[in-house]
Length: 210
Image (cartoon, rainbow, N blue to C red; front, top):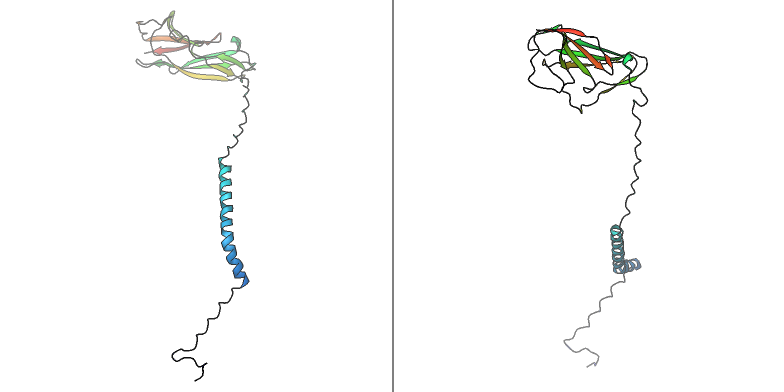
């Protein structure tokens, strides 16, 4: 019997498996980059994020507001313009009708004209303008009898030849200085009206009350 003959019941030894092939070099470096590079990228991202927060939290400079220049008041348009002399004021009062029936308030158009060649100023407010209604020697009504002391001015700047016309109504009552009450009402008849402004007086205009 041959001593090298394998004992019965034992087969030949199995062959060892072949070792796995080594990956290419570029695959090796990709794996190393993934393992080492990702943490590095995360650190860089954290640093950038933290730096951004610090920049946002830093106090910002207050915006510089330029000081607005102080407005210099311009001289009024009437600066240097003289007051109208009585001789250069042409005044007129025109009744709205020849006769006003009972119960109708008479109305008038009052006109102030600068008859001179140069501009001038005149206050035609209720405190300075006076419209007077008379009947013969009877002073019936004045627009200034009941005007408050603090009545507003109405200064007119009239160029040469320029006119200013306004409407005025008479409430068909009697008045007196100091504005007393319980005065008798004016009756039917013939009346005249004049206007005084700036030292000048208009011609009388005649109208009737029915």
